[in-house]
Image (cartoon, rainbow, N blue to C red; front, side, top):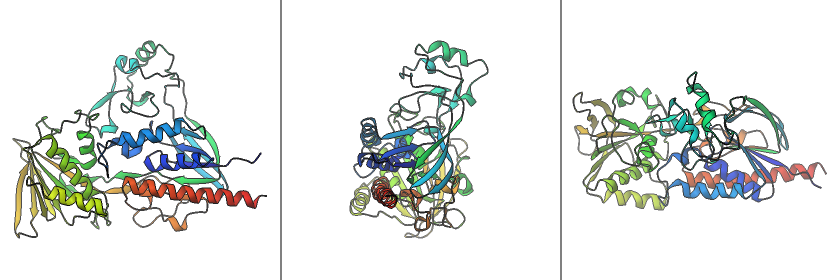
Length: 424
């Protein structure tokens, strides 16, 4: 019987899921290693995504179902690659798996969370609310299994969780372990991080209470977000009827990110529709350097937003964002390129279109991965048998990441078959 070769996928976001299920359905074993306690990556945090502007759960659920129905796919959550040794066709990968403190007996009954007396910042919602230390990452998490953040547990809070669970699913004896995975090909799909816009001190993030990022806006608008989809400002819960979007927050700036982050313009246009649909009397203003909407449908979407008389598009780079100390309104100072002169306008809330940073820039995968000056993977110079997907190579959207993942799987399969023929 021929040996079945394994494709290791590092990262369980949309492109990683696509790569794994495509490899598995082609008859190969696929193993996903994901650092979060759930699969789905950034897409799971979106309210809607292009092109259909549908909830991300529709695309994710299809891939989750494909995983459930295919015995060729295994996955490890709360796991990180520590070391990669070997060569094309014969990689030996060391993976550190962190304890979940909840085993496979979990039925998602929520009893542990109800009994838990400790709270933690909810990173899924970018710290805009809290969860219990025993929590489900989000309502449609896959795997549908609770996790315990031991760092947030009070000294005497373990017993209530243990007593509340009727299924013996809580296990505080779980330890960090290192496992070895043998793979014939490796797909890196670790995705992207949001640029830390607090480094751009003129934009007020972290200082002005009602300045948020574009990803925070996605969570704020989502039905399963911190406000159940109600777009209100963080300082006082006031409905946001007058909002500004600031483009290139960190991008296209030699002091921060010198490149265009590709998705930001479309994200802000999309988020403008969130506000306009929820509050018909609302007004929105987008401050931009250039509006970039690559693709036919995307350009049509731009014109659709432009046709809304309550939306204003202003070409100009924002110089300063401050706060009215009494009302907590946000004051934006910007140069109006087309009209000439300067604008000083007040808004209920401001959304910064923060740039996209490849995950390799902050946390390099344990291997000799060649990077560009910007921190993206230099794909043509990668070691044979190792492939990078989507936003690791350049800023792209979800659809293009999925397309790229399919192409990379084809290369992985070709590599596996080529190595198999050589050994005959």
